[in-house]
Amino acid sequence: MPQVMEFKLPDLGEGLTEAEIVRWLVAVGDVVAIDQPVVEVETAKAMVEVPCPYGGVVTARFGEEGTELPVGAPLITVAVGAGEAAEAEPEDSGSGNVLVGYGTDHSRTARRRRVRPGSAAPAGAAAPAPAPIAPAPIATAPIATAPAAAAPPATGPVAVISPLVRKLARDHGIDLRGLTGSGPEGLILRSDVEAALRAPEQAPVAAPAPVAAAPAGERVPLKGLRGVVAEKLSRSRREIPDATCWVDADATELMAARAAMNAVGGPKISVLALLARICTAALAKYPELNSTVDLAANEIVRLPSVHLGFAAQTERGLVVPVVRDAQARNPESLSAEFARLTEVARAGKLAPADLTGGTFTLNNYGVFGVDGSTPIINHPEAAMLGVGRIVAKPWVHKGELAVRQVVQLSLSFDHRVCDGGTAGGFLRYVADCVESPAVLLRSL
Image 1 (tube, rainbow, N blue to C red):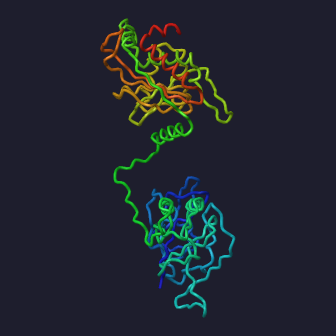
Image 2: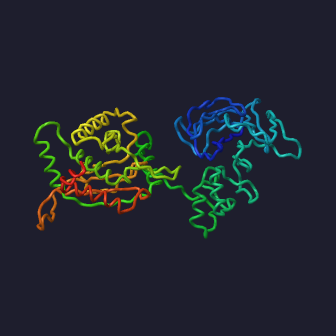
Image 3: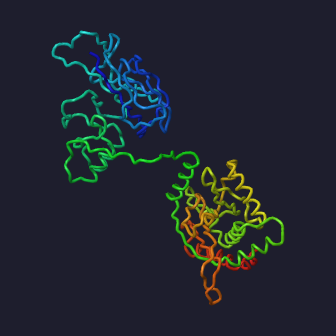
């Protein structure tokens, strides 16, 4: 009578714990030979074909193309011994192949024999049972997939496949033989080891703990532009010891100066352009903030030009176009360049050169109607100035309470390139220029 064997995704080596199904090479009902590739999968390292250690008829496939499976998850089931051509292996031998593209395990000699209907095992010998593939990176014996009447003895093989699970248990002194796995057929998962770490005083449970259901809701793949932004911001948080300081400033005089500039005709000057011009003047006084850290050389590199990035929200997400040599531009030129890059960004046509090479970023989140924020530095830059909304507020002006146009300014800076005194000096100079634009004339 045919025996249905379950073939699971084997350990792919090199610390890989999952793979994505790219293409099935067999269908339900197909006859497969031992070591015949049955599926093509893609890992973080390469594309590989996975051979099946059983010969017989495919009775089921698990997972559609595009599905990501963890190591140890079922791939297919095969009815072994469905006909005279079906083959099986001795209990202690491997099928030979590990993965197409990953080499073959030659540590043991595999001997196959043909099982014919009605044939009997030699007297005194146990009938051979097909065994799952034993990948080269795993030193333990393969896990038997046939149903068992009782739990394996303490001296038997440990029901764990992932080398990461073994390392986690070894590093924390957890005896895997004392755990009951919650995976398929008692497979010990990472969650089982973590549960043991959280409750070391408890005795191993006799039955697998119920697996919590995945939270409901829409799932959005973290890839494309969103994935790039996520990686860049995560790297900033990992590598840069940032600090943030902020100050409220009276922007009434700045708004009046802008109105006067635009009243004389010609292209309109934007508030962002005036703030950008103030930033370039402040960076000339405090060049430490227009720098980057070269970790390989263990040096701070102060940069000669200000390539000013500015945050722009588009339908595709947040992008940061860069204005080249901003220190050499006047407010009119800055306004024109901001408008051009914003239009190109919203059309989704920014070139890679438009998005790279920035040395300092100006982030005007006031357009979203918020007052303050703690900006995340745009790695590998050293600082970012955040600008909140300019809104009428009560303010003490010339010793009297008045309604003034107030803005909050926030500076996030890399504490490796300077200390709080330098950062505070930069931010105070920016605020002084906002409150009294005449201060800016001294540096023009």
